[in-house]
Image: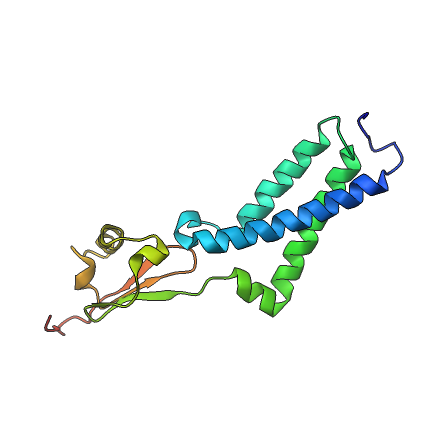
Amino acid sequence: MDYVSIFDPIPWPEVGLGVFQTATLYVLLILGLKIVGRRVFAEMGPQDMILLLLVAEACDIGLTPEGAGYWGTVASVLTLFFLVGITERIAPLRRLTESKPVILFHQGKLLVNLEKYLLDEGDMDASVRKYGLGSYRDAETLILEDDGNITAILPRPGVREDK
């Protein structure tokens, strides 16, 4: 098949297939990232990463002499922007993709299975060093934030807890 440029008629069947494939990939990637967990992609939200990856891939498709060419790229990019916009504006969909902070440790007790969040005690120890603590057990509370970072709440000065 010849490359389809901006000046050629729009190949509607191929463009429609591109929209369908883009939408299904978006949904599958969102679900996959939710299953994998938040610590793997600590610095950006799943939607941000998916949008960047798929837009880049969709643009790559437009540069190759196959299928819907330029118009398929336009349809894929617009589909991605539409899906991200819908996900951000509809509260139930946004709640499916957002993560909530999780209290990992409070007053001397681990409250969750660390493996579920792809963490171990070494990760927690490393995270409290920036607060000047030697061990996560010296903190009052540790919270796994929605961006993958761990926040520590320090004990109040002068208040000593029995451990």
